[in-house]
Image (cartoon, rainbow, N blue to C red):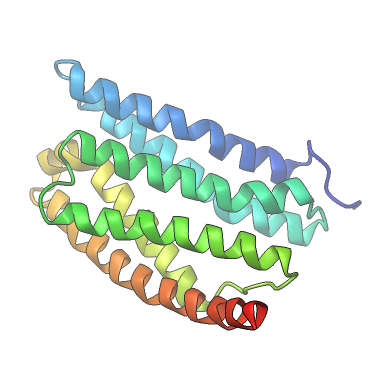
Length: 197
């Protein structure tokens, strides 16, 4: 198959993930406002899971079908960050994430901004920073933690304590985030120093 273009299936999956971001946010917003709106938590979780699955398939299909494209390479990490960041902000807003656990969310958000800025700078120098296996584990832990927390109070009605499990997973994701963020910074710092010398 030919090289990817804007309407190739892998790109359409990425666009879908971008569209899922405001849908998840809207579900969480109305779940908090409407009386008996806990069903919206399940809808948010369903949309989130579908979006997370497309994260695997868009990259996989682009490679298998040789449909890699510039727009796909640009939008894929942005869509991931938008989905996780928006979900964390909404979960903090409705009190699912609160107290000391807010620091785990702050660490995750700060790392995403730091790594994005670092990648942008290194791209100007034509230096690529490869994604490590541990960074992939970090992303998986993050996605699972947010998924469990999206169920939140609705999940607690089915399985008591599920929100606590989500908080523990969020802290694990935050610790992995710190470690992988330091790895990226250390790799990028060498080029920063060389560029200033």
